[in-house]
Length: 378
Ligand SMILES: C[S@@+](CC[C@H](N)C(=O)[O-])C[C@H]1O[C@@H](n2cnc3c(N)ncnc32)[C@H](O)[C@@H]1O
Image 1 (cartoon, rainbow, N blue to C red):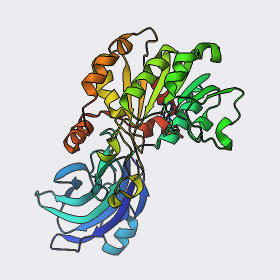
Image 2: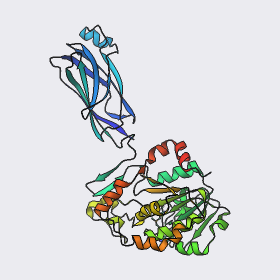
Image 3: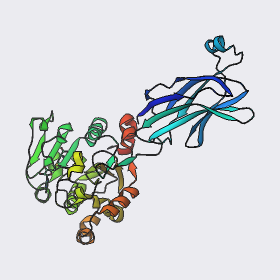
Image 4: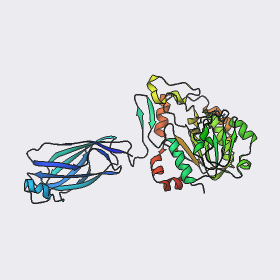
């Protein structure tokens, strides 16, 4: 949460206000939960209170209780003319204006200042995303998936890790424990092995891997954490999940990548580059692995899913896994038949995003205790 004050404008004196001023806030970043407003008002009628107004609602109010000898010296006022109030940012618009208004004892009101600011997300309203008209795409505003994975490795300290889809090894490089990496075409760079003692590389499609290898025997124990980021077609991810869950334990964490497309183009089953309007997202391809969300909700309500708002295209964290479950394997062909023809058009995308209950990734990274409570591997 970033809250920035972009400007403060003082209103001119009038028939009821001799002079008024705000000392704070000043332009720049302020606390994400609340910003302090300090000021004073010298008036020509008795003041009841000062109120802070956002979109016609009074957010907070306070009385003139702060003595301001500096102001008294100039205006000769004997009673306190200063006020101080913390104004909460919960519920403020992304581009907000807060009016500072004096309420007189006879009920009249006069605005003495306007505070303008921006906040990148609405605290207390859960994770927020926005829609970027320039690129015609949704956008996630949480912690980038890479940073979120780093936080998971740091705070959960898995002992075993399985990755499907490794490519250069960027996500694998974050891993400190024994690991298995599967990819039909590794393009590893030098950091891929990190400081790990044991890494098993399987250069083959994941179907071959699950059909021929025994994960528990390789690692000597079940998988604590898995990251599934291989072929971006839903039936592949479904099979990867079936194979992975069987190698997990009930407290394992399975992460699915790219399940939240930002626009219909990137959700196609075939990679197609974006047009000129897409700029930074033009190369993204999520494919149709988004279908795993409705599939798991229908067939595996026993799993706990968190859709994290991690840019660019989300992370789905699955817990309460059941290695003995046969439901997905037994229903595999029904599931594929049911979802094969579904296309993510603009209408479907909108309702998909509307129905998403995303988990705010920022507080989890800022307060790692919350991360470990949610995803503890023990
Ligand atoms: C998006 S990249 C992985 C990126 C990596 N996880 C990261 O975050 O740095 C997807 C990878 O999946 C691999 N892939 C494609 N088909 C696969 C399959 N059937 N089984 C396993 N991996 C596959 C591709 O070769 C590619 O390297």
